Amino acid sequence: MEKGEGGNQMPVTEFILLGFGNQPGLQILLFLLFLVIYVVTLAGNLLVVALVVADLHLHTPMYFFLGNLSCLETCYTSTILPRVLASLLTGDRTISVEGCITQLAVFGFLVTTECYLLGLPLVVMSYDRYLAICKPLHYGALMNGRLCLQLAAGSWISGFLACTILVCLMSELIFCGPNEMDHFFCDLIPMVKLSCSNTSQITPVIYTFSFLNLLLPFLSTLTSYVCVISTILRIPSTTGRQKAFSICSSHLIVVTIFYGTIMIVYMVPKSSTLRALNKVFSVCYTVLTPLANPLIYRLRNREVKEALRNAVRRSVTLTKNLD
Image 1 (cartoon, rainbow, N blue to C red):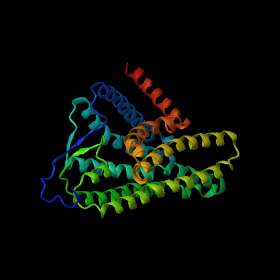
Image 2: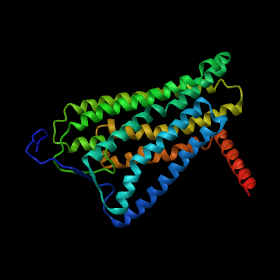
Image 3: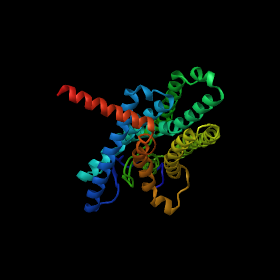
Image 4: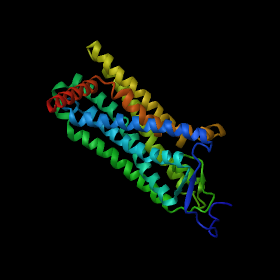
């Protein structure tokens, strides 16, 4: 049946998320794997948030944004993985249409915000090094908390506005079958494909938003890398250059995984091969990136390690005093 001709059909009230297949042995293995990933992701990101809040030495612009990212990814992962774990454990793969749109709304808001926030630590590092090297006397006045709050608030507000527009368009769609979604969560494009409404208006909006919220932040991040490299090369200390390059290279790995896979999913025309790998790419930016971020370039930073050691020492001292 062509889209737009489904007016006489009964609307569906729930979707079936096909997930990763129906083999019992595979379901148990995937449940254990995703459970470990979820626990490690939550522990790593919440640890970063706690350290950034508690340690005064981490009250700097770059760590402010890293703390924002960790907070975002804690919520981001919790939007996807608990539902996946419940499905793998119970075998119940149904979700109501309203629940699906709600998950899409929260996920869309968080993933769009991450597209903007992910590049900000690098932008700030570049700006930080530029001011410290070229305008040291202006550093305190220009690199301040107000600017950081404005950049972070702009990212969260941009994500909310972009998501609100798309969800309003999605809520107008009618779903009248089939109701099987070949995905492990309620994603935008698979939902649009299941609609029997006329989707000719929403498709251009999806591509426009993908360009504005994916490609432009990605290009901005690449531009920041050029600035970072140029400022790093002007650092007189060899140790300082090595430290900056270490942070930069780690960040590049995460950025490549996140932006690369998400742009393939939303912006690249689908061949049969890409369509088959769609869920694999989705796992990369929804599951692996939040896991890798704190492990690759947050908890490895010297300042974070030192803050963690101080926290452990304080904890041990407090325990001894209580005993």
